[in-house]
Every structure is written in structure tokens, then in C-alpha cells.
Length: 97
Image (cartoon, rainbow, N blue to C red; front, side):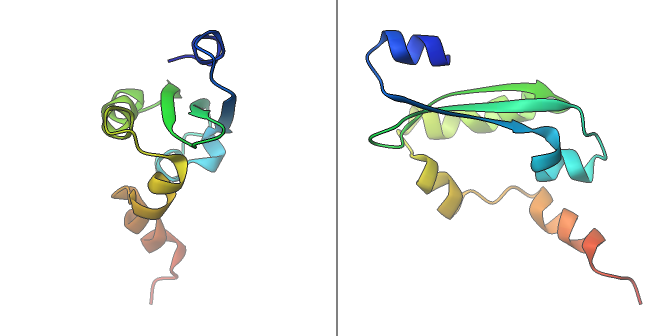
């Protein structure tokens, strides 16, 4: 669902656009180009839609179907969703011995 579709459906939309530099996978890929848009219902936090224009967008869209189909909220994602690249990215932040 797009932001406009959410508004047309009567949702109080809480939408956030993240630049690729704010996305761990993009940082791991050293690809700072692109953006991710998360469309959520403001009162409930329920994820209504996700849009990606960045490298690996297909993987992002596949992962986005789970919270949308299961009625998860943005807080649910923050509390439970752990993409595999979080660990991978952390390894590169630790100095090698």
C-alpha cells in the first residue's frame, strides 16, 4: 500500500523514508544509493506497505510480506526482526587482531 492509498483508505499515515546510508544491508554492500519507504498506520503502528528502490530490493520486498500479511507493527519489527546482515556488518566494525 502506498502512502496515498493509505490516506485514501482512511488511515492516519505514519510514513518514513530511509536513505540507503541508514540501512545496514546497504552499508555492508557499500552501496549508498537508494531509499526505503515504510508506510504504517499512525495510531496502531501496523505496517501497511514497504517500497524499496535500492540494491537488493527484491529481498527487501520478500521480507516485507511477512509483517504486512501478519499485521505486525513497526515496534514488532524493531523488537523481533534481525536481518542476517546485522551480524555481518558488526564483524567489519570490530578491528582485526
